[in-house]
Image (tube, rainbow, N blue to C red; front, top):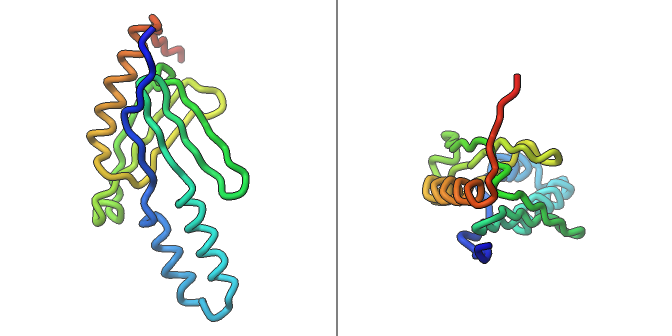
Length: 140
């Protein structure tokens, strides 16, 4: 079996919180919005994505840390999403439909070079499926 190697590591951009920052910034004098802004910043700051040749790991949590792992051979479909607001900052989302029961939809949010990452993801998904002999069947 091939040894697992890290292919990409990244974090989402704080741009995803910009709308909240602007809205909460208007009410900064109430003090509570400052704590909400800090919490939102910490949530994004503590989220990390790690793509290896076999898995996608998502690290998240501020006080309680969690690591979600998705075996690449479970990814059924991927989609590149470029909302206008994120495109203004050269960011994109990668949305994946999976056969994983706990996480049927997984999104890598607000990252740079999403097209390149999606192509790497596609390559390693196919490689994992071939290595494990996994075949996809759609039953309607």
